[in-house]
Image: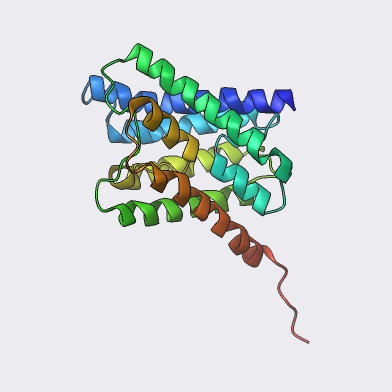
Length: 219
């Protein structure tokens, strides 16, 4: 268990450090990375982390994913809180280090709505639904592990960040949004990114069961 929790701490640290770090660097050095580069950074780091930690902890790296696996009956409910605490600790450590490295880093990559709150709320639900739907399809049990799992999940994250990032931030991950918001003090819209991804992940579970249930043969 200690290995699994440590893997979640380290994995979420790297995810937030690289992903939001790309946002911070693009802020302090305008145009150095760009929106497409930020989206690809998030996708590529998740791809790498699944292959690095997938066989240890499942490489959830996301409280919404942990919740989705638990709702699906693939993950022990007693481990939900320990996994989430580990993920938040890793994310907070990453945002703290980014603040130290880039004191003029603005929001540190916090996710903020570009339009009305409901627009980002709905987008985050839909984005996380599709992400969780994909994860349930390529994972074994509660582990994102396999030849194509990293490529598939990383590609979905990059795709969703590419088109929805300018509108809602394309968080899909409460820990990824919580840590920069807390460290930078931008808490006003945080509730969107704590609730919507969890709703989206939960929606994916019954839909996945319907899609993958054996068809009833005609009599």
